[in-house]
Length: 354
Image 1 (tube, rainbow, N blue to C red):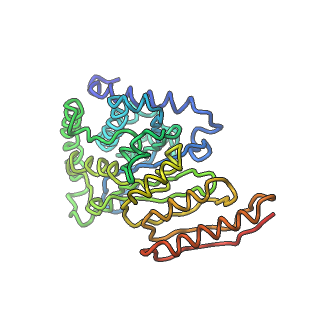
Image 2: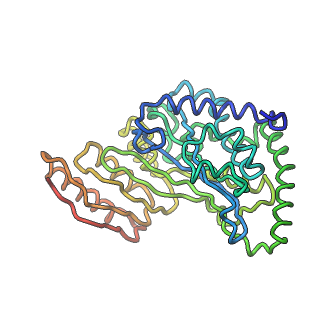
Image 3: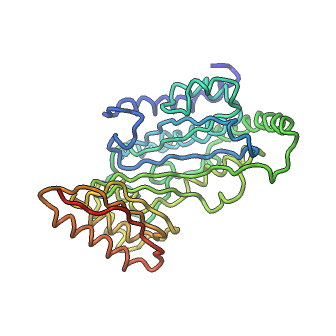
């Protein structure tokens, strides 16, 4: 490691530990997160805006970030918060120095637009996608099972803002800020100091999947404050956007899948229904005859659904077509009549029994 980047060594070690855990998982393909039977997966993207017409200056790559559900590990707040710190720091480094990012992080990348191209001068920036996921399910004593709504930071065990508690983290960000100003100045000179209005949109989003046995679902979330631009002005303004993503409340279906005791989660919601922003949710290959479909339906009903997309071209269990149709009808009727803010359900295909 170049001495210039030695101050990042502690956080690189955190990524190394993430890789070790990820590689140890029983999966036929470590790149296919949905095939790994992981309960919750969130693709976290926070990229700065680039001048319009120059978006190709950045190349994407995916880095797996496993968060253990083990209670003992989650109690080690320093360790789990360190994972979040590493994500925030290297997300900034990707826009400060492509070469440094690749030197320090390339071995942890599992997917890229074109991996070899990331090492060519054609790209100025690397746009990392942090593939965060929960390893296992959380116990009934965990805060996630006892709160009506929690943030993504809380779900992954790292709810605290590193800027508020870690002098080492702030020092690293300050060092990156100095380098970032140099990069920003060079880019502006290269672009002829274009007007701000000519810059494209930033990307700051969480794309999630919840792997329920009966009705897997997916969706996307952005923070309300992320409507503003996130350009290359300062590390603080840019990294602030990523921190805000960790403060978004997770969808109820995600919370249900994250908790091992679904009955406990439903009892928690009965006492205090969650208050969530309007969302669009898409069902992935629903198998209504599988166990737990009623619990998943209740979780959907607790959400502030704006749109629910359902694709019905799925074969159900041969021995349970009646039960499957009953569960499908229960879900649709519950969502239609139980959602005062519902705008519409999108359905494609037809239910078939084989």
